[in-house]
Image 1 (cartoon, rainbow, N blue to C red):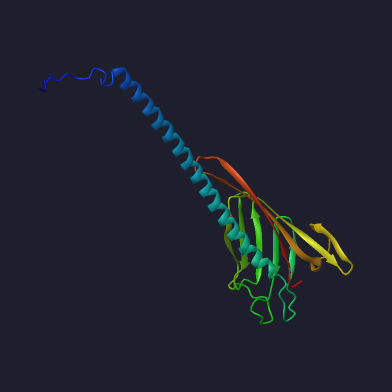
Image 2 (cartoon, rainbow, N blue to C red; image 1 turned 90 degrees about the vertical axis):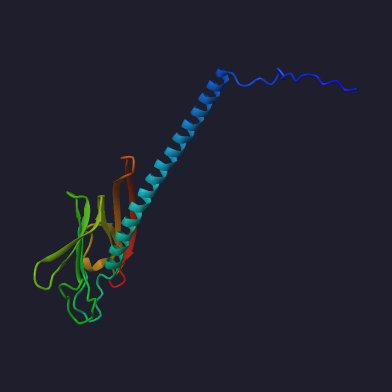
Length: 203
């Protein structure tokens, strides 16, 4: 014969106490706060790197444009006297017979000047217009320094590298050094310096 005993709860299965709940809530809150700060820091870092990469891409695009122009300096298939017109540290002026019609045309990108506008931290590209005057465009902004160095060769070989070391006809390459400055998403200032050498194929 079986005997039915009355149900009695197991006293060892008690629930959480209020103190345990408070501690668990505090630990979970600290964990969530730490996770938030880590994610926020990662997002700030990502945005800063994204802005730096974007600024570098813009600068490289402008520098590549400048290099393509300078590389054409002295292009003179019909002997009109194209070449480098100045060898200053912050300015380069040059001509080319781009359309090969035996003259240097104003307004046709055949007489180009690149100059550093230190007051506004930018590089300017200008050329004479066909109707008179000069057309000027801003090529690159946020430039904190720009310098041109010239590599001179005469009939005996290398003369030297610098500014004003020889005749303009003896310039065979141009070294461009540019420093760009910008701010990241957190307001911090960063700088990047780019250097490239342009060999003048037509001189």
